[in-house]
Image 1 (cartoon, helix red, strand yellow):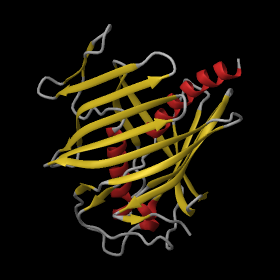
Image 2 (cartoon, helix red, strand yellow; image 1 turned 60 degrees about the vertical axis):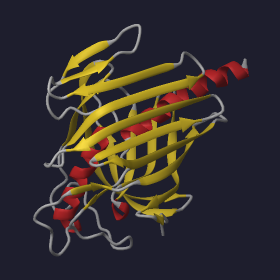
Image 3 (tube, one colour; image 1 turned 90 degrees about the vertical axis):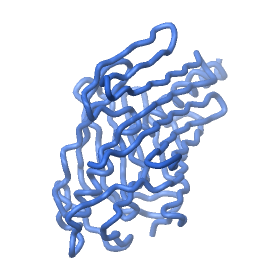
Image 4 (cartoon, helix red, strand yellow; image 1 turned 45 degrees about the vertical axis):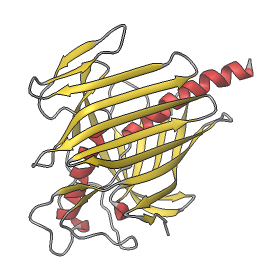
Amino acid sequence: MLYTTLNRTGYALLTRILIALSLCISLWIQPAVGVEAAADNITLTTRTSASLSPTAPPAELQVIPTPFRAVYEADYKGLPIRATGIRELRQTGDNQFTLSSTATSFFASVSEESNFTLTPENRLMPVEYQYHRKGIGKNRDDILRFDWPAQQVMNDAQPTPWTLSIPMGTLDKLSYQLQMRYELLTAYQLGQPWPPLAYQVTDGGELKTYRFEVLGEENVDTPIGRFTALKIARVRTDSDRTTIFWLAPAYDFLLVRFLQEEQKGGFELILKEAKFRGEVVAGT
């Protein structure tokens, strides 16, 4: 009975970890022109980034995705289950990029991948999104293909393929994070108030709006040190689930902690190791 329970829990955990990783902004998009923040000289405010502005902010920022790899350890509250989450961003061609997210444990594995390009206006345009789940429960494979001339996204997964009409600017469940992080980084570089964080995302054959709110600043302790972090929550009106994550401005808003709680329990992701601009990430 215990093994069966753990199997079911492991399956649910891996699915939730992937969702958690999808909610987090553990990626870096480095401005081609700008001033880097010093790791030991950061002051955040609850609703504005004005105190973070460089002395001579650039008039225009160009987004250049910087390859990275970050590893997170997942802790499911109250159960003897451990899982590892890995996120990686790589350039695959001229103006072609891939962001991948995987979660693995003894019970199952879940992977997610977004292939995208950038417009001259620094808007992300997803080309293909993939989701694969293996292990406990029913395996699942979804591949979404974006047809921008027709403004449609298609999923040919059997037995229920679907096609959805979408407006320009629609994102998938990974690429919206890059757009969100770029907007935070732009405000950070220019000393502007934190922008409204809302994105249209294709999710399960529907067009949904994901909303987030900046809550303020906190220090976060991790296995690789302490980080000053911006605290952000997902805004929900139809669920009692609380989703909060902490991003380190000193490392271009690297995710250092994630927490999800609800009535039946919750789980936490903590940064275990990462490389940023080719260097090992470490807190104070």
